[in-house]
Length: 90
Image (cartoon, rainbow, N blue to C red; front, side, top):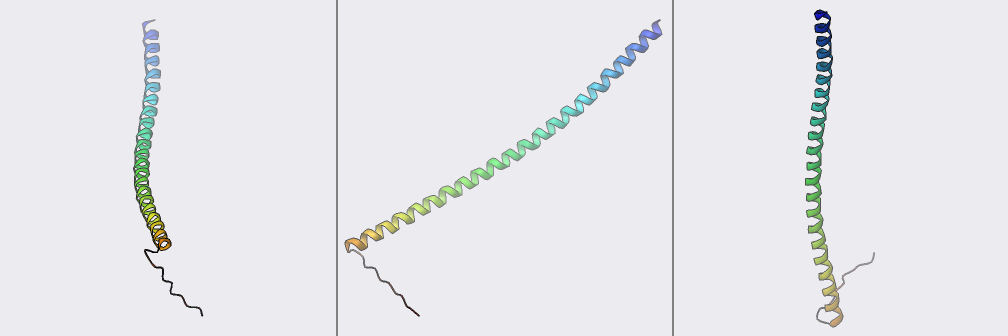
């Protein structure tokens, strides 16, 4: 009788140990995937930040040049500057 009880406890212990080990492996896999995804997200955030900075620089330069062209147009219209065009026709 004791032998049957001991065998059933041993088999239950081995059963639950096996399931625990499988769950632990699944948890470790999930953790490694999450860490890999976090690294990817951080790289994307850095790229987005870099692109945003470049966009701001280009927009600032574009606005500066637009203002410069508008000022030159006003100067030509008011007569403060002269516009010279050098063109040739074949």
